[in-house]
Amino acid sequence: MAQADPRELQALQYYLNEYGQQAEIFTRQLEMIEQRRVEALAAIGSIRSLNGEQAPVVLVPLGGGTTVRARVENPGKVLVNIGADTILQRTHEEAVTFLEDRITEMEAMEKKVAGTIEQLRGQINEIAHRIEAAYGQAQPPSGSKVHV
Image 1 (tube, rainbow, N blue to C red):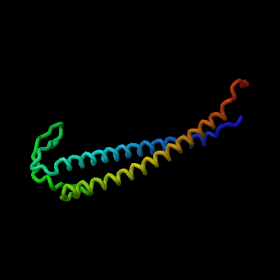
Image 2 (cartoon, rainbow, N blue to C red):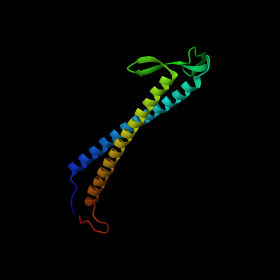
Image 3 (tube, helix red, strand yellow):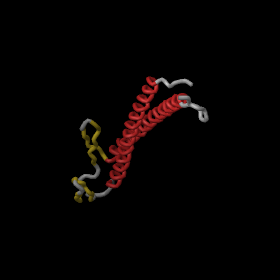
Image 4 (tube, rainbow, N blue to C red):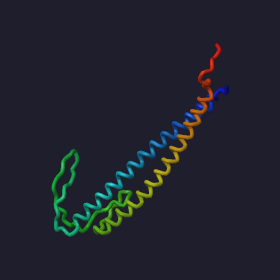
């Protein structure tokens, strides 16, 4: 009966843990991207609902679960954070286009991250099978007697 190499098993277990941690990190990243995508979709809906209204009333969150009603003075202009704390004023059409482009980028990122997660899961499964096979070789066949 072949004995499982403890160093190989230790290395496989290490890789299994590493890949598992990486898959967890990418899964959290995927969740954050999805949350930002949903927020962008909601923002598009909000921007479109302001279109055409004169001084619409909106709810503005202040924090701590508090909100105030406020009138939007110029609903045709939207302040858009384009990154690196840079904010530009855009028309509501330009803001919607910007958000739609950002959503397209996020969807591409989601596909890439999901592909990476699938690759990691494949590697995790392969390593788990190797570990099982190594332990299976170390076990005596059922029904056989072990002499002490």
